[in-house]
Image 1 (cartoon, rainbow, N blue to C red):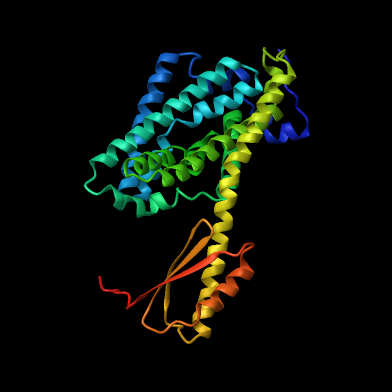
Image 2: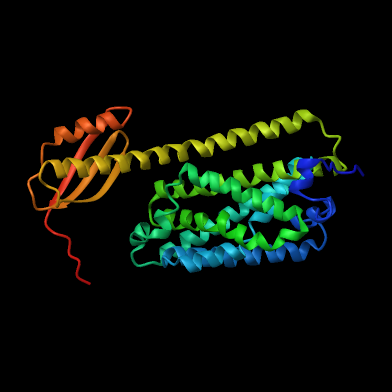
Amino acid sequence: MTTPHTGRLPGFLVPPTQRRSLDEVTDRLDLAVGDSRSKRSAFWIMLTLSGTIAVAGVVGDSTATVIGAMIVAPLSTPILGIGLGIVAARGSLILRSIGYVVAGIVLVTVLGVILAQLLPNPETVLTNSQVLGRTSPRLVDLLAALATGLAGAIAITRRDVGDVLPGVAIAISLVPPLGVVGVCLGSGAPSLAIGAFVLFASNVVAMVITSVVVLTVAGYGREAVEVSTSRRSRRRVYAVLTVALVVVAVPMVVNSLTSLWARQVATATQSWLRDGGAGDTEITGVTWSGRTVTVNLLGSQQLPSVDQLRATVDDLVPWNPEVVVVSVVGERDSAG
């Protein structure tokens, strides 16, 4: 067996005294190694329970419940297994791990769809914080996923940092987005389901990429018996991962820019109202739909000319969006 490289960077990232062997990492990430029957049983039981908990937390808008689902979710095991399979050039491990991930996606999504059908009015769930927080992922979510995936990969390879895995499970958030996908599909909101799935996919891609980086730097590729596999096949895999990263990053960049422009439009609207003598009017929301931005207002005063706001928005946004102002005359009822 080839001795793993112990240079300055690998030694700092995964010290030799704390480094798990390839066999140890394989035993943790490959559900077909060792007591495979018990591993598979535990995986499906815990995934079913975590999916049920996650969907219940999403429907009930309970952050604590959703966090509980994150902690017991076992989906990170086959995802990291994909990374190990790539580094160790084990095609069978890659295929098995992908199979578990796909089956897990189907299971949790179906649980969400079923529970949504049991609700008397499933459309009301679409506006709670658990759904809204996972249906419009931004670039910062991808950056967080990359950092979290890095922490998870290091925790798998080092014996002295295994205690951080529950925190990694909470941060990476794999099962809750799938629960949101199911609930949104069951509630007749496929566009929101797509947004939640993009968040899940970005987390998966981030975990695979960071695990490949960590396992490669730590020398597991050189330690693997199957190291004779051609470099060309590995390059294909790396190219696929790069494309996958770009695919999930594009909608996140769009969402990030949309959120930024929405905040800028809200600020411009506040100035427009204040300068026009309608400073008491409340901005209840700024939403985008294609090239149209809609500003929702609540107030009882006469509004200034909308042309002034349109001119300001044209200066803020790179194209010339259509500005629609929807004003509701009245006052917000703050009574309990």
